[in-house]
Structure formats: structure tokens, C-alpha cells
Image 1 (cartoon, one colour):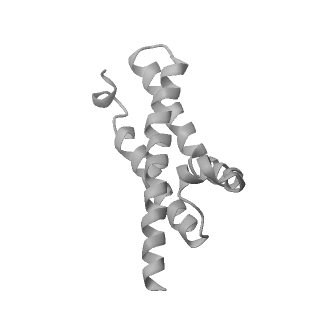
Image 2 (cartoon, one colour; image 1 turned 180 degrees about the vertical axis):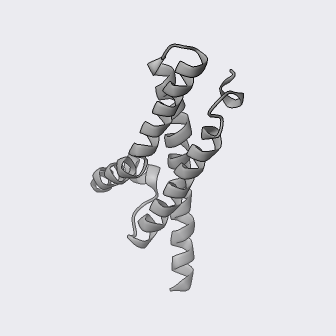
Length: 118
């Protein structure tokens, strides 16, 4: 429970912000490439699954890794032990959840905006 107020608390703002920025960039590219929104494409567009997963891994792979490493550093400093499952959960929440929740809506909004201009 002390994580948001302990050392390295900046990661709770910086990492989701970076994930959102990467998601906006990827969503805009999806819209310009006329792809389906992210979660919709993963679920219903079989031909788009591979490219969508690869682009997400490329975008947030390092960010997820940094989130996990920073949480491990926090655990060593504060708890004097490393709990890998907790670090993975924190990395997932700080990097992947914001990315996935923003990329699809950005694609939809950008697609609508591009359609109005045409």
C-alpha cells in the first residue's frame, strides 16, 4: 500500500503517461493504415492479429520491462526482498492497461476525423 507514496513514486505518473503517448501514436497510425481499433482487431479481425500484437510489443515491451525493473528496485529499497509476481502486476497496470485502453478509442476518433476531411 505504500507504493504510491514511497520512493520512485514518479513512475506512477510517468509510465502510464508514456504508455498513453505511445498508444496515441499507434492509434493514429492504425487510423491512417485503415486498421480496426486495437481490441476489436484482436478479437474479430484474424488477419490483423499478428501485426497488432507485434506493434504493441514493439511499442510497450521496453516500457513494461522498465516498469517491472523499477518496481523490483522499489521492492529492494523498501521491502528488502523481490516479489516477482507483484512486479509483473505493477508493470501490467502501469504500462499495458493504459496502452490498451487508449489505442482503440484514438483509432476510432482519428478514423472519424479523417473520414470527415475526405
